[in-house]
Image 1: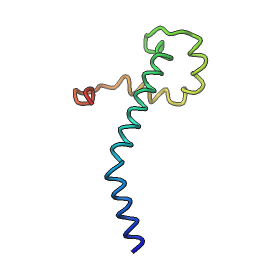
Image 2 (image 1 turned 90 degrees about the horizontal axis):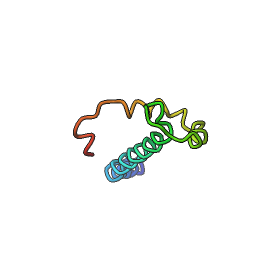
Image 3 (image 1 turned 30 degrees about the horizontal axis):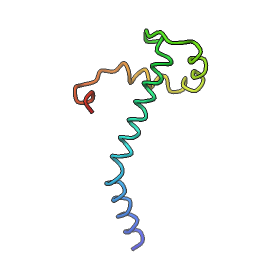
Image 4 (image 1 turned 90 degrees about the vertical axis):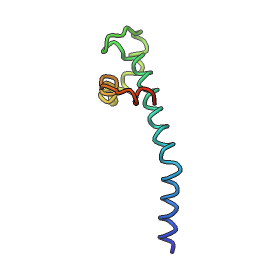
Length: 82
């Protein structure tokens, strides 16, 4: 009985909160991409101040490959409007 109750609880939580959590994670990543673009945009042809680059580079070098792939991949119409 307890196992069935846990399964029902997990399914209910998954149905009600999964989409919200997924969209919040995507929005967080997009806002980080905008911040990274303003800080490290010179690698993509955007001029930025050296002071901010020196502060943030040690924190973001781990995620730079993911950021670069996100910015440079093709996006279709539905991804742009969502």
